[in-house]
Image (cartoon, rainbow, N blue to C red; front, side, top):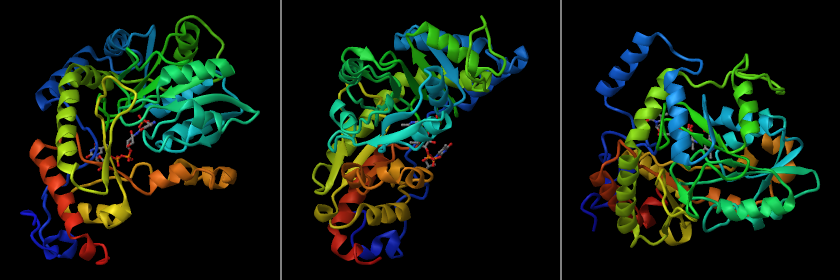
Length: 399
Ligand code: T4K
Protein backbone atom coordinates (compact mmCIF):
# COMPACT_ATOMS: atom_id res chain seq x y z
CA UNK A 1 0.00 0.00 0.00
CA UNK A 2 1.23 3.48 -0.82
CA UNK A 3 2.01 5.78 2.10
CA UNK A 4 1.22 8.76 -0.11
CA UNK A 5 -2.17 7.57 -1.25
CA UNK A 6 -3.43 4.76 1.00
CA UNK A 7 -6.75 4.50 -0.84
CA UNK A 8 -8.27 5.50 -4.18
CA UNK A 9 -10.30 8.16 -2.35
CA UNK A 10 -7.05 9.96 -1.40
CA UNK A 11 -6.28 10.94 -4.98
CA UNK A 12 -7.01 14.57 -5.87
CA UNK A 13 -9.20 13.46 -8.82
CA UNK A 14 -11.42 11.75 -6.23
CA UNK A 15 -11.50 14.78 -3.90
CA UNK A 16 -8.30 14.10 -1.90
CA UNK A 17 -5.54 16.64 -1.18
CA UNK A 18 -3.10 17.24 -4.07
CA UNK A 19 0.37 15.86 -3.41
CA UNK A 20 2.11 19.09 -4.47
CA UNK A 21 0.82 22.52 -3.49
CA UNK A 22 3.31 24.06 -5.98
CA UNK A 23 2.77 22.56 -9.46
CA UNK A 24 5.87 21.00 -11.02
CA UNK A 25 6.45 21.82 -14.73
CA UNK A 26 8.47 19.88 -17.31
CA UNK A 27 10.71 22.75 -18.54
CA UNK A 28 14.31 23.22 -17.43
CA UNK A 29 13.88 26.87 -16.30
CA UNK A 30 17.52 27.13 -15.19
CA UNK A 31 18.03 30.81 -14.48
CA UNK A 32 20.73 32.73 -12.62
CA UNK A 33 20.09 34.25 -9.20
CA UNK A 34 18.45 37.69 -9.10
CA UNK A 35 21.80 39.17 -8.02
CA UNK A 36 23.71 37.79 -11.02
CA UNK A 37 20.88 38.83 -13.34
CA UNK A 38 20.73 42.37 -11.92
CA UNK A 39 24.48 42.77 -12.16
CA UNK A 40 24.48 41.70 -15.83
CA UNK A 41 21.57 44.01 -16.69
CA UNK A 42 23.20 46.95 -14.87
CA UNK A 43 26.33 46.52 -17.00
CA UNK A 44 24.19 46.61 -20.17
CA UNK A 45 22.42 49.77 -18.95
CA UNK A 46 25.75 51.41 -18.21
CA UNK A 47 27.03 50.63 -21.73
CA UNK A 48 23.74 51.77 -23.24
CA UNK A 49 24.17 49.23 -26.00
CA UNK A 50 21.19 46.90 -26.11
CA UNK A 51 21.15 44.99 -29.38
CA UNK A 52 22.52 44.85 -32.96
CA UNK A 53 25.48 42.54 -32.49
CA UNK A 54 26.71 44.04 -29.23
CA UNK A 55 29.74 42.97 -27.18
CA UNK A 56 27.89 40.23 -25.27
CA UNK A 57 26.59 38.67 -28.49
CA UNK A 58 30.13 38.76 -29.93
CA UNK A 59 31.48 37.10 -26.78
CA UNK A 60 28.71 34.50 -26.76
CA UNK A 61 29.23 33.55 -30.41
CA UNK A 62 32.98 33.12 -29.83
CA UNK A 63 32.39 30.94 -26.76
CA UNK A 64 29.84 28.82 -28.58
CA UNK A 65 32.17 28.32 -31.56
CA UNK A 66 34.84 27.04 -29.22
CA UNK A 67 32.51 24.88 -27.16
CA UNK A 68 30.73 23.31 -30.13
CA UNK A 69 33.95 23.02 -32.15
CA UNK A 70 32.53 24.74 -35.26
CA UNK A 71 33.84 27.57 -37.43
CA UNK A 72 30.70 29.74 -37.22
CA UNK A 73 27.97 30.27 -34.66
CA UNK A 74 25.23 32.81 -35.34
CA UNK A 75 22.97 33.68 -32.45
CA UNK A 76 19.31 34.27 -33.25
CA UNK A 77 16.07 35.40 -31.62
CA UNK A 78 14.82 31.81 -31.27
CA UNK A 79 15.39 28.44 -32.92
CA UNK A 80 12.29 28.73 -35.11
CA UNK A 81 13.79 31.81 -36.80
CA UNK A 82 17.13 29.97 -36.88
CA UNK A 83 15.64 27.04 -38.80
CA UNK A 84 13.91 29.43 -41.19
CA UNK A 85 17.11 31.37 -41.83
CA UNK A 86 19.13 28.20 -42.31
CA UNK A 87 16.65 26.81 -44.86
CA UNK A 88 16.63 30.08 -46.82
CA UNK A 89 20.40 30.45 -46.54
CA UNK A 90 20.85 26.95 -47.94
CA UNK A 91 18.55 27.84 -50.83
CA UNK A 92 16.31 24.83 -50.22
CA UNK A 93 13.32 24.49 -52.52
CA UNK A 94 10.45 22.09 -53.06
CA UNK A 95 9.94 19.19 -50.67
CA UNK A 96 11.91 18.34 -47.55
CA UNK A 97 11.72 15.13 -45.54
CA UNK A 98 11.36 15.55 -41.78
CA UNK A 99 9.87 13.56 -38.91
CA UNK A 100 6.28 14.26 -37.83
CA UNK A 101 7.31 13.28 -34.30
CA UNK A 102 8.86 16.65 -33.43
CA UNK A 103 7.85 20.03 -32.04
CA UNK A 104 5.62 21.79 -34.54
CA UNK A 105 8.23 24.56 -35.01
CA UNK A 106 10.37 22.27 -37.21
CA UNK A 107 7.64 22.09 -39.84
CA UNK A 108 6.41 25.66 -39.30
CA UNK A 109 9.88 27.08 -40.00
CA UNK A 110 10.14 25.08 -43.23
CA UNK A 111 6.66 26.20 -44.30
CA UNK A 112 7.64 29.88 -43.72
CA UNK A 113 10.65 29.19 -45.94
CA UNK A 114 8.24 28.05 -48.68
CA UNK A 115 9.04 24.34 -48.36
CA UNK A 116 6.63 21.43 -48.43
CA UNK A 117 7.10 18.88 -45.64
CA UNK A 118 7.12 15.19 -46.43
CA UNK A 119 6.80 13.51 -43.05
CA UNK A 120 8.74 10.36 -42.24
CA UNK A 121 8.56 7.87 -39.39
CA UNK A 122 10.83 7.55 -36.38
CA UNK A 123 12.25 4.41 -34.83
CA UNK A 124 9.67 3.27 -32.25
CA UNK A 125 12.35 2.41 -29.64
CA UNK A 126 14.65 5.42 -29.90
CA UNK A 127 12.05 7.95 -31.17
CA UNK A 128 14.73 9.19 -33.62
CA UNK A 129 14.79 9.16 -37.41
CA UNK A 130 17.27 6.91 -39.24
CA UNK A 131 18.46 6.52 -42.84
CA UNK A 132 15.85 3.76 -43.22
CA UNK A 133 12.90 5.89 -42.05
CA UNK A 134 14.03 8.83 -44.20
CA UNK A 135 14.63 6.65 -47.24
CA UNK A 136 11.13 5.19 -47.00
CA UNK A 137 9.68 8.72 -47.40
CA UNK A 138 11.87 9.89 -50.29
CA UNK A 139 9.98 11.10 -53.38
CA UNK A 140 11.43 12.37 -56.66
CA UNK A 141 11.06 16.11 -55.80
CA UNK A 142 12.61 15.87 -52.34
CA UNK A 143 15.54 18.31 -52.22
CA UNK A 144 16.76 18.02 -48.61
CA UNK A 145 16.39 16.34 -45.23
CA UNK A 146 15.62 18.14 -41.98
CA UNK A 147 16.75 15.78 -39.23
CA UNK A 148 15.79 16.22 -35.58
CA UNK A 149 17.87 15.24 -32.55
CA UNK A 150 15.35 14.52 -29.82
CA UNK A 151 15.24 14.22 -26.04
CA UNK A 152 18.90 15.00 -25.35
CA UNK A 153 19.77 12.03 -27.57
CA UNK A 154 20.63 12.00 -31.26
CA UNK A 155 19.56 10.35 -34.49
CA UNK A 156 23.11 9.10 -35.10
CA UNK A 157 23.98 12.13 -37.25
CA UNK A 158 27.25 10.67 -38.59
CA UNK A 159 25.40 7.74 -40.16
CA UNK A 160 22.67 10.00 -41.54
CA UNK A 161 25.30 12.38 -42.92
CA UNK A 162 26.99 9.52 -44.81
CA UNK A 163 23.67 8.36 -46.21
CA UNK A 164 22.58 11.90 -47.26
CA UNK A 165 25.93 12.48 -48.92
CA UNK A 166 25.48 9.27 -50.97
CA UNK A 167 22.05 10.54 -52.05
CA UNK A 168 23.35 14.05 -52.79
CA UNK A 169 20.84 15.57 -50.37
CA UNK A 170 21.65 18.57 -48.15
CA UNK A 171 21.07 17.87 -44.48
CA UNK A 172 19.89 20.43 -41.93
CA UNK A 173 19.71 19.46 -38.26
CA UNK A 174 17.10 20.68 -35.83
CA UNK A 175 19.16 20.24 -32.67
CA UNK A 176 16.92 22.55 -30.63
CA UNK A 177 17.01 20.03 -27.77
CA UNK A 178 20.61 18.92 -28.22
CA UNK A 179 22.93 21.52 -26.75
CA UNK A 180 26.00 19.92 -25.14
CA UNK A 181 25.19 16.46 -26.45
CA UNK A 182 28.04 14.42 -27.94
CA UNK A 183 27.98 11.48 -30.30
CA UNK A 184 30.71 9.55 -32.12
CA UNK A 185 33.37 11.54 -30.24
CA UNK A 186 31.97 14.90 -31.40
CA UNK A 187 29.58 17.45 -29.93
CA UNK A 188 26.43 18.16 -31.93
CA UNK A 189 26.95 21.39 -33.88
CA UNK A 190 29.15 20.44 -36.80
CA UNK A 191 26.99 17.82 -38.53
CA UNK A 192 25.29 18.34 -41.88
CA UNK A 193 25.19 21.73 -43.58
CA UNK A 194 24.07 23.42 -40.35
CA UNK A 195 22.59 22.69 -36.94
CA UNK A 196 20.14 24.88 -35.03
CA UNK A 197 19.92 24.99 -31.22
CA UNK A 198 17.24 26.53 -28.99
CA UNK A 199 17.93 28.60 -25.87
CA UNK A 200 14.25 28.78 -24.88
CA UNK A 201 13.48 28.98 -21.15
CA UNK A 202 12.57 25.30 -21.15
CA UNK A 203 15.96 24.28 -22.61
CA UNK A 204 19.07 23.33 -20.68
CA UNK A 205 21.04 26.38 -21.86
CA UNK A 206 18.69 29.30 -21.90
CA UNK A 207 18.35 32.98 -22.69
CA UNK A 208 14.59 33.09 -22.11
CA UNK A 209 14.03 33.13 -25.85
CA UNK A 210 17.00 32.54 -28.12
CA UNK A 211 18.97 30.11 -30.19
CA UNK A 212 21.87 29.73 -32.57
CA UNK A 213 22.85 28.34 -35.95
CA UNK A 214 26.14 26.41 -36.10
CA UNK A 215 27.92 25.69 -39.37
CA UNK A 216 31.37 24.94 -40.74
CA UNK A 217 30.37 26.45 -44.09
CA UNK A 218 31.79 30.01 -44.12
CA UNK A 219 29.85 31.02 -47.21
CA UNK A 220 26.55 29.87 -45.70
CA UNK A 221 27.37 31.64 -42.44
CA UNK A 222 28.06 34.90 -44.26
CA UNK A 223 24.79 34.63 -46.17
CA UNK A 224 22.82 34.00 -42.98
CA UNK A 225 24.63 36.85 -41.17
CA UNK A 226 23.38 39.18 -43.88
CA UNK A 227 19.87 37.78 -43.80
CA UNK A 228 19.65 37.91 -39.99
CA UNK A 229 19.97 41.69 -39.81
CA UNK A 230 17.46 43.77 -41.78
CA UNK A 231 20.22 45.86 -43.28
CA UNK A 232 22.84 43.13 -43.69
CA UNK A 233 26.36 43.37 -42.26
CA UNK A 234 29.97 43.00 -43.37
CA UNK A 235 30.70 42.46 -47.05
CA UNK A 236 27.78 42.68 -49.46
CA UNK A 237 26.60 39.22 -50.41
CA UNK A 238 23.51 38.33 -52.35
CA UNK A 239 20.72 36.99 -50.13
CA UNK A 240 17.11 36.19 -50.96
CA UNK A 241 15.59 38.26 -48.13
CA UNK A 242 16.62 39.97 -44.94
CA UNK A 243 14.72 39.82 -41.68
CA UNK A 244 15.23 40.64 -38.00
CA UNK A 245 16.53 37.49 -36.28
CA UNK A 246 19.04 39.25 -34.02
CA UNK A 247 19.70 38.29 -30.42
CA UNK A 248 19.63 41.17 -27.90
CA UNK A 249 22.33 41.92 -25.30
CA UNK A 250 19.95 40.93 -22.49
CA UNK A 251 19.44 37.52 -24.07
CA UNK A 252 23.19 37.10 -24.61
CA UNK A 253 23.89 37.97 -20.96
CA UNK A 254 21.50 35.23 -19.85
CA UNK A 255 22.96 32.72 -22.30
CA UNK A 256 26.52 33.41 -21.09
CA UNK A 257 25.53 32.81 -17.47
CA UNK A 258 23.61 29.72 -18.52
CA UNK A 259 26.70 28.39 -20.32
CA UNK A 260 28.69 28.87 -17.10
CA UNK A 261 26.04 26.83 -15.26
CA UNK A 262 25.60 24.16 -17.92
CA UNK A 263 27.75 21.36 -16.46
CA UNK A 264 26.11 21.76 -13.05
CA UNK A 265 22.64 21.63 -14.61
CA UNK A 266 23.55 18.66 -16.81
CA UNK A 267 24.71 16.70 -13.76
CA UNK A 268 21.66 17.68 -11.79
CA UNK A 269 19.41 16.49 -14.63
CA UNK A 270 21.35 13.21 -14.77
CA UNK A 271 20.83 12.66 -11.05
CA UNK A 272 17.07 13.29 -11.40
CA UNK A 273 17.00 10.76 -14.26
CA UNK A 274 18.68 8.17 -12.02
CA UNK A 275 15.95 8.58 -9.41
CA UNK A 276 13.24 8.22 -12.07
CA UNK A 277 15.03 5.13 -13.40
CA UNK A 278 15.04 3.32 -10.10
CA UNK A 279 11.66 4.70 -8.96
CA UNK A 280 9.80 3.54 -12.06
CA UNK A 281 11.76 0.33 -12.72
CA UNK A 282 9.16 -1.84 -10.97
CA UNK A 283 6.12 0.00 -12.36
CA UNK A 284 4.99 -2.27 -15.20
CA UNK A 285 3.57 -0.41 -18.16
CA UNK A 286 5.89 2.59 -17.78
CA UNK A 287 9.13 2.82 -19.76
CA UNK A 288 11.70 5.59 -19.48
CA UNK A 289 13.10 6.45 -22.91
CA UNK A 290 16.88 6.78 -22.68
CA UNK A 291 18.79 9.30 -24.84
CA UNK A 292 20.17 7.17 -27.68
CA UNK A 293 23.29 7.32 -29.89
CA UNK A 294 25.14 9.61 -27.48
CA UNK A 295 28.13 9.39 -25.14
CA UNK A 296 26.94 12.41 -23.17
CA UNK A 297 23.37 13.65 -22.97
CA UNK A 298 22.20 16.96 -21.52
CA UNK A 299 19.29 15.02 -19.95
CA UNK A 300 17.06 17.87 -21.05
CA UNK A 301 13.83 15.89 -20.71
CA UNK A 302 12.47 12.84 -18.95
CA UNK A 303 10.35 10.95 -21.44
CA UNK A 304 8.13 8.09 -20.38
CA UNK A 305 6.00 5.74 -22.47
CA UNK A 306 2.79 4.39 -20.97
CA UNK A 307 1.48 1.05 -22.18
CA UNK A 308 -2.23 1.31 -21.38
CA UNK A 309 -2.77 -2.46 -21.33
CA UNK A 310 0.05 -3.16 -18.89
CA UNK A 311 -0.37 -0.04 -16.78
CA UNK A 312 -4.11 -0.43 -16.45
CA UNK A 313 -5.14 2.96 -17.89
CA UNK A 314 -4.36 5.23 -20.80
CA UNK A 315 -1.57 7.81 -20.77
CA UNK A 316 -4.24 10.54 -20.95
CA UNK A 317 -6.10 9.29 -17.86
CA UNK A 318 -2.80 8.95 -15.98
CA UNK A 319 -1.95 12.54 -16.93
CA UNK A 320 -5.34 13.75 -15.71
CA UNK A 321 -4.61 12.15 -12.34
CA UNK A 322 -1.04 13.55 -12.23
CA UNK A 323 -2.20 17.07 -13.12
CA UNK A 324 -4.72 17.03 -10.28
CA UNK A 325 -1.81 16.18 -7.95
CA UNK A 326 0.30 19.11 -9.27
CA UNK A 327 2.53 17.05 -11.61
CA UNK A 328 2.31 18.91 -14.91
CA UNK A 329 3.28 16.07 -17.26
CA UNK A 330 3.06 17.01 -20.97
CA UNK A 331 2.25 14.79 -23.94
CA UNK A 332 4.88 15.96 -26.39
CA UNK A 333 4.31 15.67 -29.35
CA UNK A 334 0.57 15.20 -29.44
CA UNK A 335 -1.05 14.70 -31.95
CA UNK A 336 2.04 14.67 -34.22
CA UNK A 337 2.82 17.52 -36.60
CA UNK A 338 1.14 15.68 -39.52
CA UNK A 339 -2.18 16.01 -37.66
CA UNK A 340 -1.85 19.73 -36.84
CA UNK A 341 -3.14 22.75 -38.79
CA UNK A 342 -2.35 23.54 -41.59
CA UNK A 343 -0.32 20.41 -42.34
CA UNK A 344 -3.27 17.99 -41.99
CA UNK A 345 -5.44 19.89 -44.47
CA UNK A 346 -2.67 21.04 -46.84
CA UNK A 347 -1.01 17.62 -47.05
CA UNK A 348 -3.71 15.01 -46.27
CA UNK A 349 -1.68 12.27 -47.94
CA UNK A 350 0.74 12.51 -44.96
CA UNK A 351 -1.93 11.97 -42.34
CA UNK A 352 -2.73 8.26 -42.17
CA UNK A 353 0.61 6.81 -43.22
CA UNK A 354 2.64 7.12 -39.99
CA UNK A 355 1.53 4.31 -37.66
CA UNK A 356 4.71 4.33 -35.52
CA UNK A 357 4.40 8.09 -34.97
CA UNK A 358 0.69 7.81 -34.12
CA UNK A 359 1.48 4.99 -31.69
CA UNK A 360 4.09 7.13 -29.88
CA UNK A 361 1.82 10.19 -29.82
CA UNK A 362 -0.76 8.14 -27.93
CA UNK A 363 1.62 6.89 -25.21
CA UNK A 364 4.48 9.34 -24.65
CA UNK A 365 4.59 11.91 -21.87
CA UNK A 366 7.30 14.10 -20.34
CA UNK A 367 7.64 14.18 -16.58
CA UNK A 368 8.95 17.14 -14.53
CA UNK A 369 12.71 17.79 -14.41
CA UNK A 370 14.75 20.98 -14.22
CA UNK A 371 15.38 23.74 -11.73
CA UNK A 372 12.00 23.68 -10.00
CA UNK A 373 12.13 19.95 -9.30
CA UNK A 374 14.01 18.48 -6.33
CA UNK A 375 15.28 14.96 -5.72
CA UNK A 376 12.50 14.41 -3.14
CA UNK A 377 9.92 15.61 -5.63
CA UNK A 378 11.02 12.95 -8.13
CA UNK A 379 10.86 10.23 -5.48
CA UNK A 380 7.32 11.32 -4.66
CA UNK A 381 6.31 11.46 -8.36
CA UNK A 382 7.55 7.89 -8.83
CA UNK A 383 5.70 6.71 -5.70
CA UNK A 384 2.61 8.50 -6.96
CA UNK A 385 2.76 6.79 -10.36
CA UNK A 386 3.22 3.45 -8.59
CA UNK A 387 0.14 4.20 -6.45
CA UNK A 388 -1.89 5.18 -9.52
CA UNK A 389 -1.04 1.82 -11.06
CA UNK A 390 -2.01 0.03 -7.85
CA UNK A 391 -5.44 1.67 -7.87
CA UNK A 392 -5.78 1.64 -11.65
CA UNK A 393 -8.81 -0.70 -11.67
CA UNK A 394 -10.76 1.93 -9.69
CA UNK A 395 -9.18 5.15 -10.98
CA UNK A 396 -9.27 4.13 -14.65
CA UNK A 397 -13.04 3.78 -14.65
CA UNK A 398 -13.72 6.82 -12.42
CA UNK A 399 -13.62 9.24 -15.38
N1 T4K B 1 12.57 22.17 -32.70
C1 T4K B 1 12.39 21.39 -31.63
C2 T4K B 1 12.67 19.92 -31.74
C3 T4K B 1 11.95 21.95 -30.42
O1 T4K B 1 11.78 21.17 -29.33
C4 T4K B 1 11.71 23.34 -30.36
C5 T4K B 1 11.22 23.94 -29.14
C6 T4K B 1 11.95 24.12 -31.51
C7 T4K B 1 12.37 23.49 -32.67
C8 T4K B 1 11.75 25.60 -31.53
O2 T4K B 1 12.61 26.26 -30.60
P1 T4K B 1 12.24 27.79 -30.15
O3 T4K B 1 11.80 28.54 -31.37
O4 T4K B 1 11.16 27.68 -29.10
O5 T4K B 1 13.55 28.33 -29.61
C9 T4K B 1 7.95 24.35 -25.34
C10 T4K B 1 8.95 25.42 -25.74
O6 T4K B 1 8.29 26.67 -25.94
C11 T4K B 1 9.70 25.08 -26.98
O7 T4K B 1 10.86 25.90 -26.99
C12 T4K B 1 10.12 23.61 -27.00
N2 T4K B 1 10.76 23.22 -28.22
C13 T4K B 1 8.91 22.73 -26.80
C14 T4K B 1 9.26 21.26 -26.80
O8 T4K B 1 8.32 23.04 -25.55
P2 T4K B 1 5.40 24.64 -25.05
O9 T4K B 1 4.49 25.65 -25.69
O10 T4K B 1 4.90 23.27 -24.94
O11 T4K B 1 5.95 25.13 -23.62
P3 T4K B 1 5.24 25.88 -22.46
O12 T4K B 1 5.42 27.34 -22.61
O13 T4K B 1 3.83 25.39 -22.34
O14 T4K B 1 6.09 25.42 -21.21
C15 T4K B 1 6.22 24.10 -20.75
C16 T4K B 1 6.02 24.07 -19.23
O15 T4K B 1 6.96 24.93 -18.60
C17 T4K B 1 4.64 24.53 -18.78
O16 T4K B 1 4.23 23.68 -17.72
C18 T4K B 1 4.86 25.94 -18.24
C19 T4K B 1 6.30 25.90 -17.78
N3 T4K B 1 6.96 27.19 -17.93
C20 T4K B 1 7.29 27.62 -19.20
C21 T4K B 1 7.91 28.83 -19.36
C22 T4K B 1 8.24 29.32 -20.77
C23 T4K B 1 7.25 27.95 -16.82
O17 T4K B 1 6.94 27.54 -15.68
N4 T4K B 1 7.90 29.15 -16.98
C24 T4K B 1 8.23 29.62 -18.22
O18 T4K B 1 8.83 30.71 -18.35
O19 T4K B 1 6.73 24.65 -25.91
